[in-house]
Length: 127
Image (cartoon, rainbow, N blue to C red; front, side, top):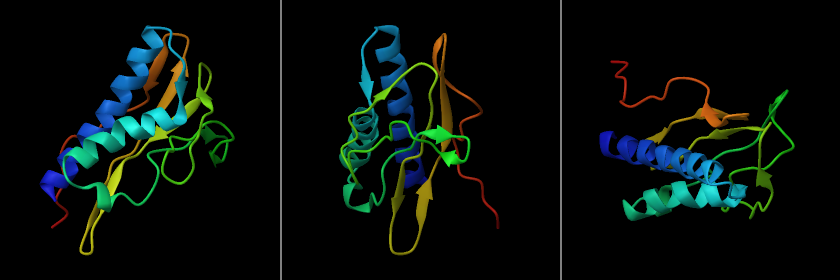
């Protein structure tokens, strides 16, 4: 569980790094690109078969928005992520006996894409 969680944290952070770097460089970012950035980390770790959903979705007034989704799994979302939008980054892996996922929200403001809260870096035992 600890290794799987470390992998999805790395995947999440890779997607954040990708979008922030692209924004600083003035490059267009499409939804599928962030999905791929996260998915590549998970696949390199050998967990590709344990991916069961896209990496994230746009945020709207009622959770899922009408904007670009971080998706090259269920669909190939070519829509652009851009200033004024919000989206989640939530990679996860799911096995027969457990699953792990981490979810953060990102808002693309005037200064670029920013994570809106703290990022979990370790598992928390509930037992």
